[in-house]
Length: 160
Image 1 (spheres, rainbow, N blue to C red):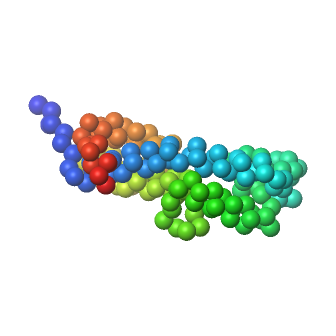
Image 2 (image 1 turned 45 degrees about the vertical axis):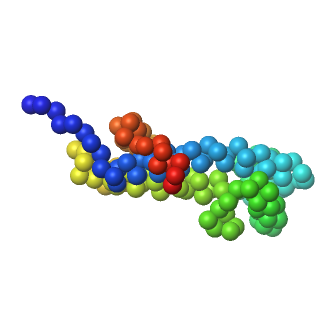
Image 3 (image 1 turned 135 degrees about the vertical axis):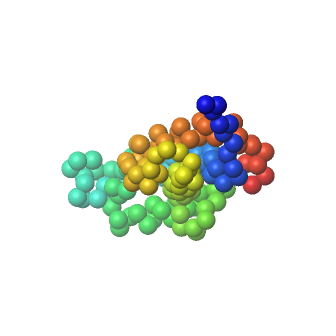
């Protein structure tokens, strides 16, 4: 039996392109966001919420741990982050949003769309993939992107 030639349709190409663009956006904004968040955290003591201080220390020092901040000060911190975001020229869809959070959310949404677009095209139950742990979803997406990458037109990414 002769193997069928695989030719993805426009939906698959578009979904793959969206994943690539979303992942690139995370790589673009992450160092910028971490840098300004780190500078803000170094600018003054930002106390850890009392419920977490025994385990995590008295002060928030790492941008990845800013969720531990005392809620009474978080709005001040968030406002400074928005000012730094604007000064860095980063745009968000939601006015109060963090560009890195939006970028990461877009990765999740675009991966989910890609997985869904594979329904009926692969001999696996796509709904089970969507219900699987993130690690398994990421493996499925990685394999799918390897299959689709040669068909994605980089010119489309530059013009969209």
